Image 1 (spheres, rainbow, N blue to C red):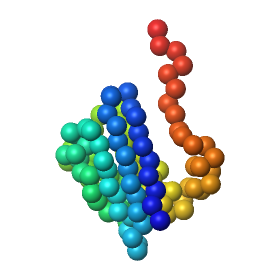
Image 2: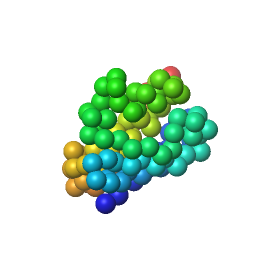
Image 3: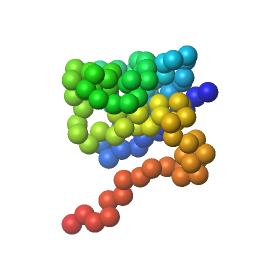
Image 4: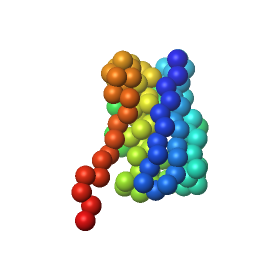
Amino acid sequence: MVTEISLNTVCGHTTKIIATKEGKNTHVHIKTTCEKLRKWGTHFDMDMKDLMGGPETILSQKMAEVPLTPTCLVPAAVMNACWLENDMISKNLARKMGKMEIIFDKLE
């Protein structure tokens, strides 16, 4: 199985996250136009403890090594892709929703 998530963000970059379950790990491949994300890492594996979050996870280590802006959606999208790939979020629900959004309701 494979899960793919695409991001079009306010920074102007496009990113695709591809998560593939391989045994006990989930392989993450990130395709992006963002140079900072390329330095952050575009190929890595996450195990079950990484999917639960916390300071000792691979995402936390990556953020410590190459900090992204606090508004970057990629770490959350990586988690969503991995959770979907590991049946921790319903794929049927994700298909039904189609997308998640941040809506700028009022900007004066």
